[in-house]
Length: 79
Image: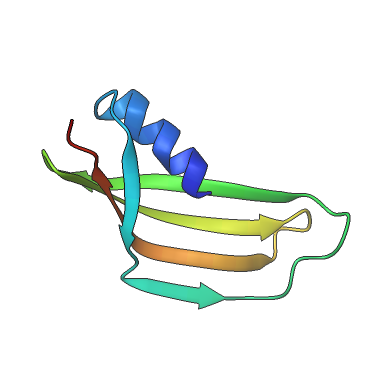
């Protein structure tokens, strides 16, 4: 999910590397099941010149929540 947020940031905000900085809130659901697929859905919440914020969910094949993150912040690396 973090990688997907980085790709979304690259495409939607600006083509620059960003690194995880903080999470406002993490909520845990069930444990992932071995050998089963997980799906993530990320939403760009806001962006500034320095950072981007996302909310994302990771769910199992059956749609049940594995982890939900709110206020995931990534900061752009300055060259």
